[in-house]
Length: 280
Image 1 (cartoon, one colour):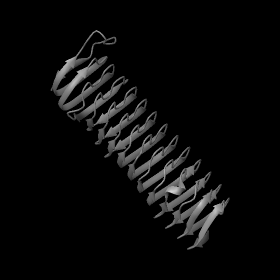
Image 2 (cartoon, helix red, strand yellow):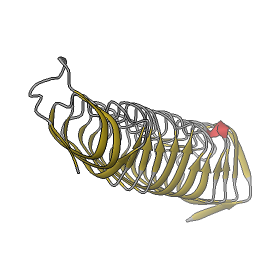
Image 3 (tube, helix red, strand yellow):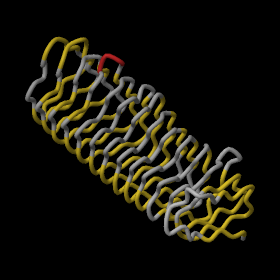
Image 4 (cartoon, helix red, strand yellow):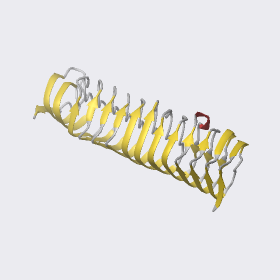
């Protein structure tokens, strides 16, 4: 493996089509596509501030690096990338990428990150300003994720989330085959139009959660005081251990709650309209 240490590059395509390369303490200045069409690349302690730094690559390991805001749209169409102990300070990271492993990575400007990616393994990640993160992703296991950003995991499929804190309006819209364990999901309109969404020991906040959902399952969850008007037009099997402010027009299924403030069943309920609601 070739090694480049403690130098700087800039301009367009300074390391284009490199293979079997390790860069240590290298700074990528203003420019474009510094490592494009590359394979078997290792980056240790590097700083990236040029656009599109890792496009169309295969086999990348990044450790202890810093991506500044100028490195926007940084990792697209790249397969098999591992990233650890790194700061990703620019938006639109990771698009159309397969085989992503993330360990202890901070995304302070995470807007539109992880779009249409596959085969994602995350353990230890923070994301701020993370609107539309994980849009259209397929196949991910996410652990210890702290998010501030709306519209998370929209249209995502085959996802597992563990031990996470998602502060996100409109999270999990139109998602399919998602299971969330031991997490706090806080934001309006959670999980609308989802299919096969399963929440296990989760804490749920925000108005009108879990409406229009198909085959929704809640196991030993709790609701915050603002999680009102829940389950409208959903097919649901749910156990909520504490008080639910209100339940409105669930379509079918069985809901067990610690207590409920108001049950609203009106002329607008949709067939079959036979959901059973009972206290534990």
